[in-house]
Image (cartoon, rainbow, N blue to C red; front, top):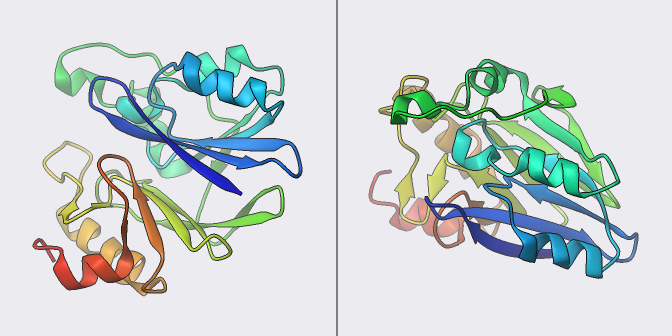
Length: 208
């Protein structure tokens, strides 16, 4: 599986395209905004977009969901943790920043922890990592040695906990009990900024 990163939207979010070219399918993680470049990559490779995985429902992580839904014929399954569904319905927290946002149609699959999502031959384990939002989710693949961790942890940083839906204690517990329990060489693909590893953050994250 090939992982390609696109930096999209005014807050420079990382959107990840996961491509299983052998099986002709792909998935998106946190499509932050419409992107013709990303769509062209999917179409030129003749891939079916089967899943859109959402780490959490903040507007800057879901701003492109409906656009991609409308642009492809494969009817991708939008996956969101059920604890973030209220945030989705309330417009992804956009009102806290002074504007309105409509995320569009409801997600197709409201998930909980302790289950897997299959994309081609890859299995992604659902890790409930609340704190930044109540339903924040990290999608972990042992085969890829990769974790798509949204805004729970960054390269030498951590997610915000000063927002109405955030909880600082939950965030630190998620990092200590979920992220830091992954194998040390696991690559962390965050919602903003460069990728890092579990080992790097255990050793050098100044907030931890």
